[in-house]
Image (cartoon, rainbow, N blue to C red; front, side, top):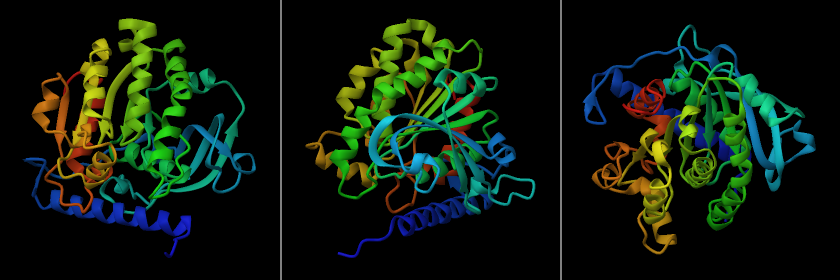
Length: 338
């Protein structure tokens, strides 16, 4: 079997996402239907486009002190903090990466030796968007997806990526799942830092695929410790293509109190990645591939992206203009309503 180099895999994956995004944008510009409603492309200014810097919290072991590529690898390590300096796509006044034009890239990574609370407090002079990646992601892929997401929804605050030690291999599903859950204590520290921050700004969470497991568990623990006060600091919670057992998810939602009303689920019954995950999980439905009505009965906001034409249909939060619009509206509404 021929194995691609990590750089080749990265380039291939991001090129595919860019092409998908461009095609989605072309459909929107042409007035075609998206998620059941006609919409035209909109351009939003984002803070990350004006100041291409990303905050990072990661449980990956640093490589060369986190200062040279790949910066943070696939091995497990203590929680590390960093600022990621990015090179933004050429925007010419607009955020063209939101419609798939151009690539973000990492210019350099600057490890931070301060306390997590200080980093959160610094960011929360504005609001903060935290992206938690899913299965089969390198640190670089996760960081660039966070930047593309933030720019694509026109987020006006600071952006952070929480990156856990995925091996980024096609056949490392079980290993990735265990490393994701191993990282939950570190993620809870991020949430705790938000609760203890003296600022009034909120944290918005967007978790993808396997990353939703960490996020859900962290929110359960947050609510157990702080009760309804947790809703004062947590804004929108978006679970994009969540790779979670539907039964575990349903029981967990009941223990989130008012936080549950802030959750938006992006689903697709034709998500082929989650179809494989379902087989690996003994046939139990994954939340991201569940029927919309089933999730709405739990009192959740649900967007059905099943009409997407992608081959896998697992990255619609990056490639589908309609999904990005819903995420933006959820953030603007604090997650309470769409």
